[in-house]
Length: 168
Image 1 (cartoon, rainbow, N blue to C red):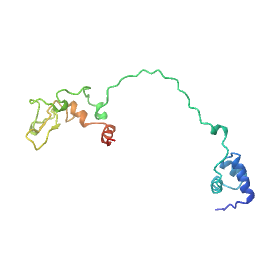
Image 2 (image 1 turned 60 degrees about the horizontal axis):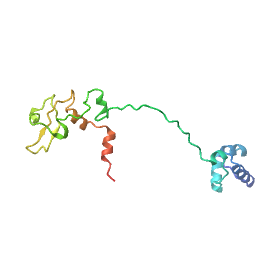
Image 3 (image 1 turned 180 degrees about the vertical axis):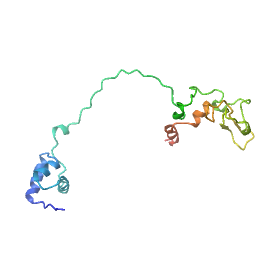
């Protein structure tokens, strides 16, 4: 590693080149036998940060004004639940009115022993209570829940994170 000694003449030349607006790489090339980093270090040690700005960098850049785009908005159904499963299983767009808000008809309710692959396994109530039951609605093919409870159970990760943020 070669150590560069800064002579008074080279320091004065560095100051003039820096004030004229040359880059550290250009100054290193002009002085010769010196690196860009050595120039930057010396400029920093000398406190030469204030240098004349070129007219192009002195004025703030104008932002391009975009022409208004006339695009037609197409409404899409709101994605609820696990979007990976949405392509495999057809999920009803509207909530199942029978299962909505856990208002489950008496004849649809199931005990643990009454559950089958065709019935919704969504638990309702406190398992220690005599009032506890499972939804028992028609389960979506291959899933343990009805359409409504599938949307509740399989939420996109972004929705889950948003719901956990503390209220300010």
